[in-house]
Image 1 (spheres, rainbow, N blue to C red):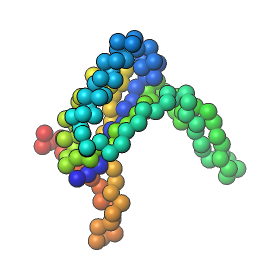
Image 2 (spheres, rainbow, N blue to C red):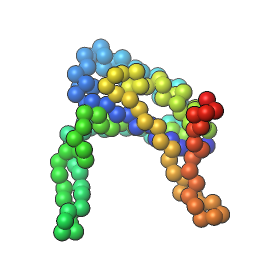
Image 3 (cartoon, helix red, strand yellow):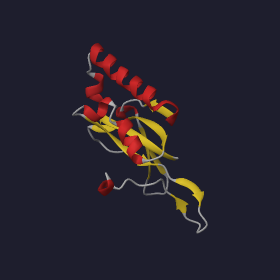
Image 4 (cartoon, rainbow, N blue to C red):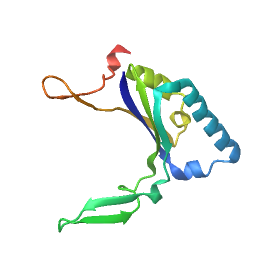
Length: 136
């Protein structure tokens, strides 16, 4: 089994502007996703909105500059994640289509395999199996 990170991104202003009914439907969709995924969910969290971020960068004198706000100014930012264990990327895609962000025009999800740092005999790190779009 491989691990995959489902990154949920979107415009935090759209999420914050949801009516109570929209918020309840959104939360219910995440609950349905979690129920369907069951023990495949290894972890998940919602993040504070992008303006709450703190960014660290190297500066020209070799030190570190700490600034309030996200790394990039953009409308869409990561708002949460699920860490999933699954046999194939196709299994994760099937689950992820349940997430409401997949169906909202201002949001989306990105699925990324987690690197398995157990080393094979050649000394190379093993990656999770890749999805072959030609085999779908």
